[in-house]
Image (cartoon, rainbow, N blue to C red):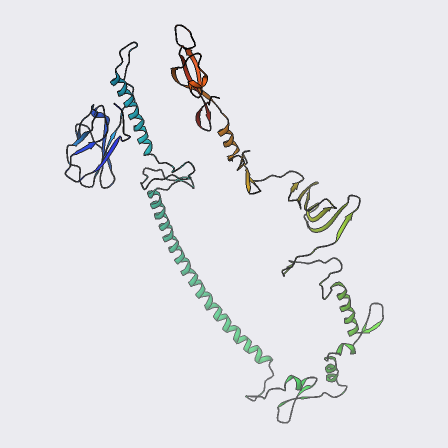
Length: 494
């Protein structure tokens, strides 16, 4: 007899009347079946043999039936699964008779066990393929999970409900505290506004009194306006016989006349001044000299400063152009040119420089020079794309190197990952090199004179048939396998 089908379980849905449910595979004994039902709420129950059901057809080569004591309720599902004990009960005696049925039953049971474990394996949570990075539950719920403890753990419904309840409680507490703070703030604001209103009113009254005390008062309710600026320029404010404001010329030589002359645009040319060397000059000449000296320091058109410039506070630069720094130092002895850039001076003998460096005709770099406590360090960014550090470079994480469309990662544990190795270096070595070997299987085959390839890949002779040793004497063969990349691989004969 053969096991001609891979089926080792059947499933049915109840209609409230049926009690007989066929199974379409072979079993040896009634106890070889596991019968379970699932109610409408998804609760699973395993039925008891001879209490909840009986079995027909066990031990034969045809199908049989599971007969329930009570009809299966409508909508409930029943599962009939063959589950054999993992044992080998066939006992063959040395030099005994050959019974084909016994051998077939033993092989049938072995095949059924393979199907049984394959069926169990098919129920596992699996990845759709080797290259997938997730597990597919195929629309089924996952139950009896622990609550998550790490950021990437799956969350349970109970954990999410608890978290939601805590969140709602915190939101309510925050709402209550916020309302309390808002009420307190409103109360304090109203009190402060009242105080400010009172202080403002008191200040207005005080200012009104000050203005009244200092202002030039007239008994009339309304006075005509004074003349416009062009009319009163260089003149005195006076009043005609009706009391209307008018502008009049001051008497020649009077104090008012002198003040008027000095207030003109050329008034500074009419005041004398003495220089530090004893020579005389006008105030206008002194002002002109000051302006000329200032212009020497500050170019009015280009913004050039001739000499050191000290800025107290922040210096802000706007515009879309570069902040240009020039001025080259030529070290002819070493064939080097430098353009000094920026110096950040620290406390005492410490600080850092940023400057441009050129080895004439060879290379160029932007350099960072840092010194402190008698120790100097240099960090160079060369025009070749190289980075150099005088004391070596230390990185706080993995380093990625990208070039020519490929990227390699140097991990902190010393591993290297990238497309050259097809993944991580350690993984490549594990997939390529054998780490252990074994002999497996056993067979009497071939003969002493046979070519090795007739024994199969990895075949190793471990014994010779007793009796006359000829080239046709059968040999005992086992098969050499190597452990490569997590898999036992048979050695291929040349």
